[in-house]
Image 1 (cartoon, helix red, strand yellow):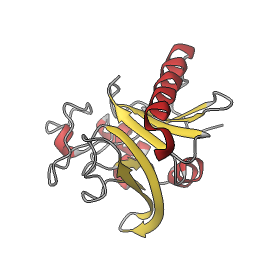
Image 2: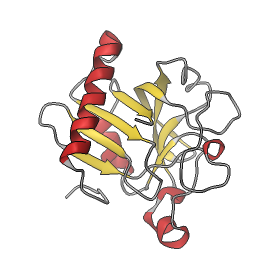
Image 3: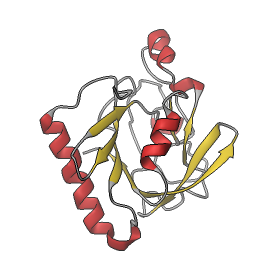
Image 4: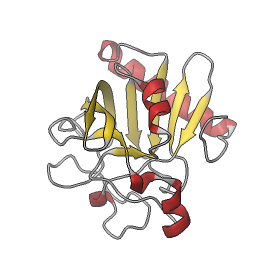
Length: 179
């Protein structure tokens, strides 16, 4: 059983797959591995699963909870209010990312991201990455009703991170936005 907190409806699956296909087509050869795509739907709050790994061949969807940046939700409501690509904004950026190399940093195993759109092309300079964090663990939702916030990174529950890194891996598309 995946670490999903809720089932993904057929309508939502169709919308996610359609978004992934559109972005893969738009980006063409910039995305070298197309078997799986990560899609984050920031119309959903942090206490819900809103990061999806899509198997583009089978149509299988795994759902996870992920954080957003402090600068995207200054009141800490659990909802993304705005996006930013400005260094120091601590906000989440929208758009297409290329998943890049794995590394070990202050949050342990992590994966770098390269922004492919004007709205996120400073991702590497801003150190926007995929990592695990204590403030993304389910206990935060139990205690506070929502996940904590990152500095713009896609942070996941520490126990789920190895599964996410294994499934997503370098060379793939990660797309984030409100759609």
